[in-house]
Length: 269
Image (cartoon, rainbow, N blue to C red; front, side, top):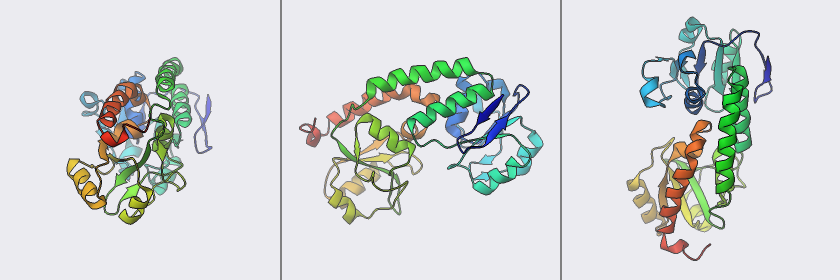
């Protein structure tokens, strides 16, 4: 079989993949949901889901601190990596001796493409198609649910960094109907509070990852900005592509309740 990965590289396989190392937490979760539990021989320390199944799998370092020699020793049939999450030099090293599928997911459609590619590579094509079909039905129902609400999405503190265009998170925000006020800026720009005041968002979304924002951060930001417009959102729900997307409906219904409780939003929709 032959698959072109999301960086344009060709992966050829003339045998069944039995040993997989995954360097991407959200894709690790997806592999389990495809039924590949017995094929996963190595994961990163950040691959924490499903919690009851990953604890006994060999940890090959962090997403950006890979134990390259250990990966070589495990002799995987397939390594699954990500252009953004993994360091380029590590991937270039591994590409010399291993078959690697490199994902590069910046849109919902690219998430579907990645899932289908992995289904082909792991002989789980039917299972991957089924999951993608279910996700598409869920996402169709949620399209434009939060239309007319202006937001900014925080991913980091000290300095404050937001989520801009050409990111998977932005694709999720746009699909829901949110207007990302920094959609004109690329990737993850820094922002100062003076500029943020000028933007005057309806809501500031503070993510639980990669920086673990909490209610204390909300209160601090509200005080600095002089308004009460911040809420915590689940970073995994907005940034984990793969089978985690199946959980979106229940999470977005909870988010809707939270936004409904913000009095200043009552007259927007």
